[in-house]
Length: 231
Image 1 (cartoon, rainbow, N blue to C red):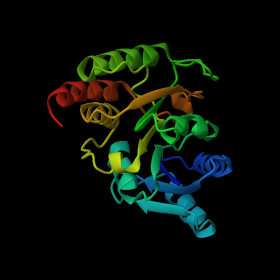
Image 2 (cartoon, one colour):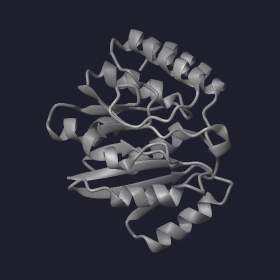
Image 3 (cartoon, rainbow, N blue to C red):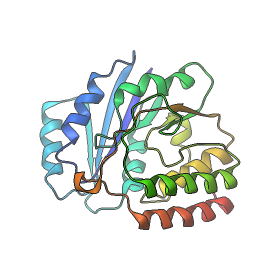
Image 4 (cartoon, helix red, strand yellow):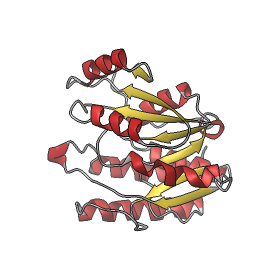
């Protein structure tokens, strides 16, 4: 068994080396493939990744020549993945790779095809940050659930895990954070067995590099309507 860890990266020169070290350090009992996709960073991240790849033959790095968004970076990573299971890892320090075993367990036990982490189920540390982000997340998750007939608690979470044959056979279109809505609608439409597990969350504020904003919330609303009626 092999796990492919897909890490979309944009302007994360200060955190990406620590994230990769954390991924390397987690014990999961299977081979790991680390795929980093730089989405045309402009803060020195590209050079950091080039140096890391030269020193670490286990890293596979792809570079976008034009900034396209998280969804586009994920498409590049998914297409290159060769593991039996694929997990999304953000390039900041908001999510802890030590939780991989918990996220993988429903798939390894034969119960799930797709696993979402949840910051709202309890069971881990959770930084107290933005009330309006929390409220917006709950609203978007509720509206998404109404169109997919799922009962997710955290549709917008980073940690999503897929059997590789599932994620590589779903056509994805959204370039930015609309990916979260799109993939949720599409795995629901395909009747995938979806599980949630509680995770910790070490959220950042905007001074620490957080990128999602209110415009992405409106984009998510558009995507909820769009993917309620189309694949």
